[in-house]
Length: 256
Image 1 (cartoon, rainbow, N blue to C red):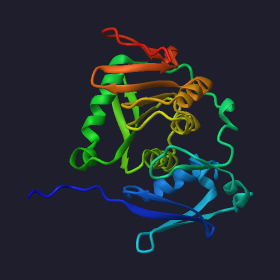
Image 2 (tube, rainbow, N blue to C red):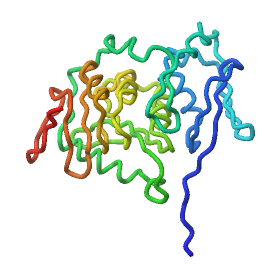
Image 3 (spheres, one colour):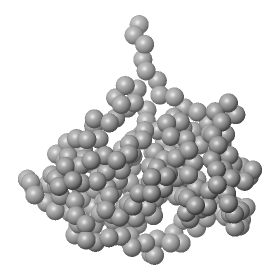
């Protein structure tokens, strides 16, 4: 009988200033970045400068975050929870829709069709755990050099929101601006996924999967350019068509 590779899954409990916040189930590829990105995308901290230290201890399955100044109203903000469709996470704190209409994305950037195809090809070369074991989601942050896509960061995890949070953390750690970048995910284009990409100021969101109605509604509100079912030479362009430059053979435009 041949041995079958199996994706790992480990609990990681996040503590902020000794206050337990959440337990995530994760592969553990980039735990510090995951913790920072989680706090960023939950809007519990507004800048990486607010974090003094992150200590990950796999023996106790914990990540201890020390802030420079205590998070205001942390207990109150944690009381209001929204259960989402996210595997490996599934909860967001606070008022999810509070800041959506305040998000402004750049309109002077473009994604070409050939650039999209280059991105999809580059992603295929990065999906190492998925190819060997399956059971994971992948997220990538990419940029375009002419018509060629370059992947800046790629993270795989058991939950798609873990992967996007890890990318968000890496962006902060590396001082990276998202306003001209492309975000790729293997997961569904849900409301939470769209919000997270928009919060990172990323104008392009691409997935090989489909979308939800609320994901589509929020994409329209934020003005993000969102493409789904993107595999090989096929894709559906859902929102933000003004940033997308069609160059090759005609493709299907979603009417949702």
